[in-house]
Image (cartoon, rainbow, N blue to C red; front, side, top):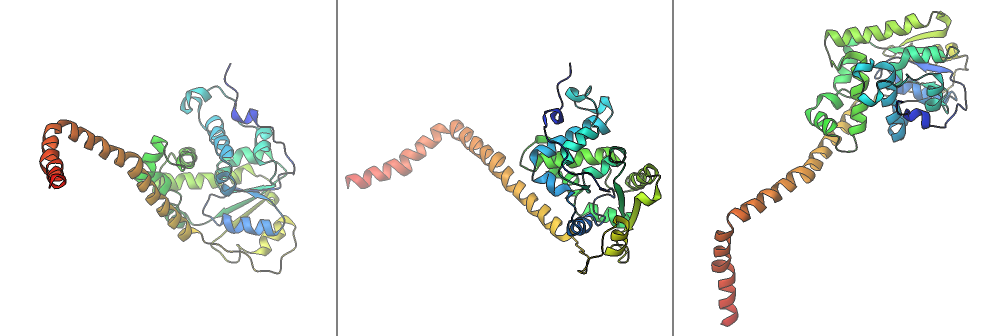
Length: 298
């Protein structure tokens, strides 16, 4: 018998219906959409929720392995486990009526099937702009050598997040971070969403680089909400995200310095003292004990 899945031990249940699936890839205006949905009274689930719930991070990793990877590509202990179904997603998302961003968006087909009454919003931007944004932000977690080393060695508190990001883009684009293969995966994602939503009144596509589309009117008309009087929220987190990544990189440098380099220096020093013990004793007797003894006897 295979070991039970982590999600099978989770007792959460759905407390509100799933109403909105925002299935555009990350870095396509999803933060602005998230804030807008909150102002309209929705409760969206996105990467921020994953970051503050370590258990959820493990569950999404399990969901990717059992649902999106072929059995032969999974960890050995998960090869015979069943994929996540609606009841499993309900446990993860039960307190939320909208989902967006990573890692949820890569489960586009599964979520569309699980929640047939939910409306689908497809945020998008030109691929070249998206690739540049990703290379300067999220993809750094898997392309910077120090981050990759810490992920492989499973050290620092960022390791679980880096493993999750690596798994997400393994299934999304085979861990290719630019070029034609990445473009094909990006376009395939959007084609999958469009083909999975045959009812056109259920799907809204938003080019979030177009001010007329990233606004209250198309969003509220699609959802059936009144247009708020306040200005539509427009956030650009790229600079802040980049700064956070650089701070994390320096933090890892300091961590490795304390955990690896310092013990290494202590070890080298100990070996040096052992090899040169006789010379060190002579130095001690001639330059430390001898002068000190003469001073005390004077």
